Image 1 (cartoon, rainbow, N blue to C red):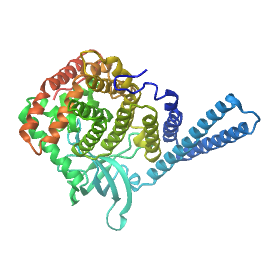
Image 2 (image 1 turned 180 degrees about the horizontal axis):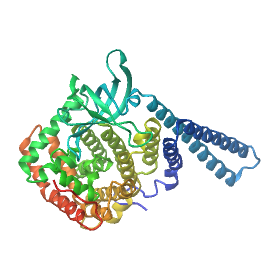
Image 3 (image 1 turned 180 degrees about the vertical axis):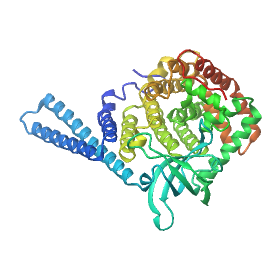
Image 4 (image 1 turned 30 degrees about the vertical axis):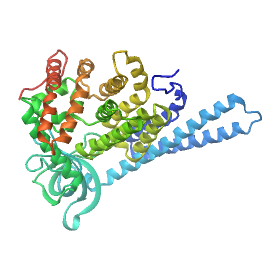
Amino acid sequence: MTDRDGSSERRTPAARDLRLVIPTLAVFAATWVAGAVRPAEAAAVGVVLAVAAGVAVLWSVAIGTRPGPGTRAQLDRTALAVLALACAVGAVAAGVQAARVHALAAHPLIESVGGRTGVRAVVTGFDRPVRTGGVMVPVRVEVTGSGTSAREAQLDVVLLARNGWSGLPPGTRVQASVAVLEPRSAGEPPALRALSAPRVTGPPGWTGRVPAAVREKLRTVSDRALEGEAAGLLPSFVLGDEGGVSTETRDEFRASGLAHLAAVSGANTTYVVGAVLLAAAALGVGRRGRIVAAGVGLAGFVAVVGPEPAVLRAAGTGAIGLAAMGAHRTGRPLAALGAVVLLVALLDPSTATGAGFVLSVSATAALVVAARPVALRMRREWMPDTVADVLAVCVVAHLATLPVLAASGLGAGPWALPANIAVAPAVPLVTVLGTAAAALGPVWESGAVLLAAACAPALWWLDTVAGFVAGLPGSPPVTPG
């Protein structure tokens, strides 16, 4: 069977797509187990998995030496090979997690839990407001202590602060006195509370200055184009900049299960890439040209939002989805997604098990597997093929993240699922037009104002749904003020 553009639906057998699924699940399971136990026990888990991998390899070799292997023997060898790979990568994951937990326990900040110390650090992301006041700043501590007691050791932590810490671009190097707080759970790094204003010891590079300038301009554009809460909601949805959103509105979005919309994920990149593909197709650009344009749009998205770790992860998974849309194949992109997940899980276990990364992977996997079939079913005589393709991308990516939100607690409350379904049509509109306004603002503010103003109906709907759902019985309480 061939679709309208001549590509065959049978080009990508589903069986090939699942080769890395079991190893990927094994990595996640081993990482979770190793993070919940002591380092010695985690190392023991790794040893058991390594032995199991060796047994599976020997068993597979033994089957291969039998006369007349046949189809059954080939299937057995394939199953054993997958089992061996799953156990091997699981062993590596358990070992990496054990080493991470051991290194965390030996970090000098741990010795200062409950006390005070000086730190030298670099800001790794933009600050976000917290419910109790002040901001939460992601930093990478490089030196703990001062003078002869200073010890070099890197650790990514969250710093809670008030005066002087808001608005520091990523890449800014600072020095301050901090209180080291108790970790929320075993295996997690401690949080810091600033006891002094930051002393800037090094300015940010252009990778921090450019996104900071874009954020400041989008705030100006939003204030000109929108009124009320909408003026603060647009930067929040597009750039994760919640500084202009009132505490009550943030609480309403959390209570309704919509707070995740303020986090940049793979879904955001999907919407942006889909819009670029649609625009390029409307201009008559060929397939290769559309893919190039979408790649440029993806790179521009990273430049506008900022090269924070979450943004780079979202862009990486979005690039795989872009490859799937361009090739109309699911085998290679899905295998590439599995390889990326395995690599991230092995190099950075805490990131791989975080809700943000899982959201990005879920959106991209759904795009690779389901966007094409859904688009084919959505096509009608009155609907252009490119419109159906982009609508399918947006719907599939959004719906695929709902189970992850429910499981992670980000979609808290009994009404989170219907709330997310209700706002599904508005989210891509705000993301695409808002991102375009953010990119256009530094060079043509008046044009950016027009794009931001076009987001007003969608922002009103998002705010209305959040307020309505937050007031329903069973939703978490919202404290006014």
